[in-house]
Amino acid sequence: MLTSQAKNVIFRFLQNKTRVQIWLYEQTNTRIEGYILGFDEYMNLVLDDAAEVSIKNNQRRPIGRILLKGDNISLITGAQ
Image (cartoon, rainbow, N blue to C red; front, top):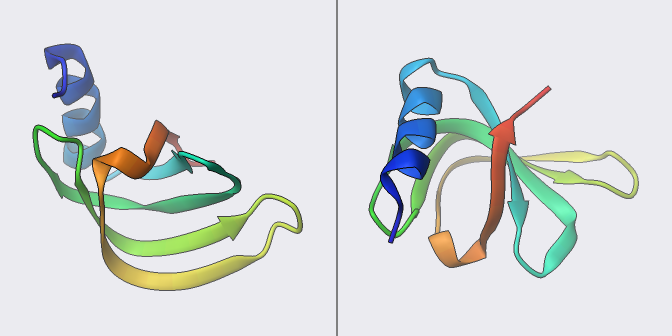
């Protein structure tokens, strides 16, 4: 379950239409970037305009609109 502080941060990203970068659990060489369209209490996220970013060679692969399960998320931050 999400704490109210975590909910507020994610909701702020959603409201401000901030592009986020998501660090994946057990996949340290891959990140997901996109815009949060929605989320739930389990930190499942719906992302729009998502891309898979390889950290090793900085390649981007567009993947469109996705549902990312909260179990796969280690960290959410604003993308640069």
